[in-house]
Length: 66
Image 1 (cartoon, rainbow, N blue to C red):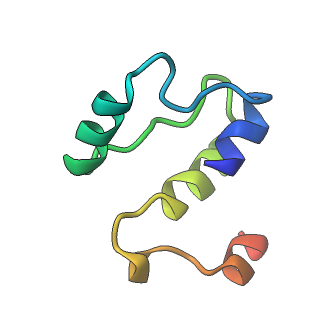
Image 2: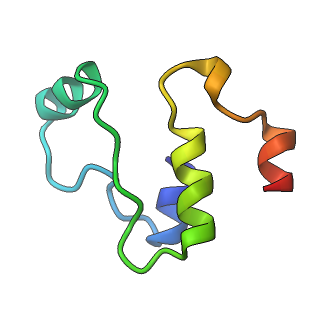
């Protein structure tokens, strides 16, 4: 989320969605799309760090190397 907010200069990741809508999306394991205009390299990092299963996500050290 932090990378999304940095890239968008503080936009809300889920836009104008209500808290209930956000919770529903998360419970259905829906993820955000990378923001418009985000380079493919940054998009790949975002998508890797948003994996549901902790074991599928890179560590911070691995993320810095991406």
